[in-house]
Image (cartoon, one colour):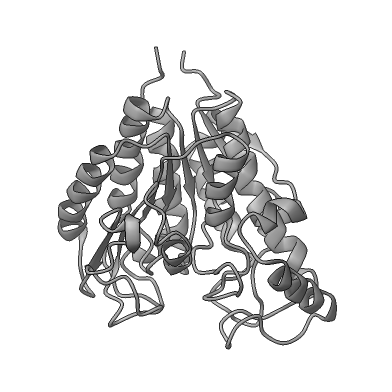
Length: 321
């Protein structure tokens, strides 16, 4: 019988509250859209379900500036205004909700690193636009960046590979580690000339000693699974060229056909393939360690399908001998 602790899913009320009201695309109903499909599929009984926790101030400061954290805390108390130039509204309790997103990702890391699980998925996470000193694109705290910093500081890992298949370029991660040669960054996204945040050109390969450590693959609007599969082979070759110690997958569902704010046309098979292949690479290079973070996605049906297929690929991956 398959070991039920091979895969952990971290979700709960605390990080589920992260979302913006008044018809905002990133609503607080996104987690439940995924959990409904997960339960219906029968996979919920085959994973280890863990609740999130709040990230500590010290954990948040491993990526974010103290001044920015103070700014968010102030807006969280007042409950008004924006945290950026108009995409990311403040609301009462936004600091705690965003801290729970980071904490959920860290719970996934902890379960993997302490041997409770080999693979993990966190639906409300993958907030890849937030920079070290400001919010951006619906993202308040960058859990991806905090995870990378904590893997290094707490667990002593250096070579981390971050793979991103969200329709939007993961600019908050890219620019935070642009000059870091040990952070391998590979990102398939809609061409920035046609979509926020307008970055991620193929010429952006890193800076200084990190030139060549980053791979950006912009795709034209309307690109389908055939385009994804061609790009994905480049991702695998790239990861294997410098084997990592830990794999992070940002698997935004907004790259699926029918998303209301993007124009890529993948099916959920793209997410299934990415998760399945990264599980193989994780076994080969990382002692099985791979954590997937939900990211974007604004069509609720697509969220359920894409993220369920990520979990299914992890669950069905052969157990380590």
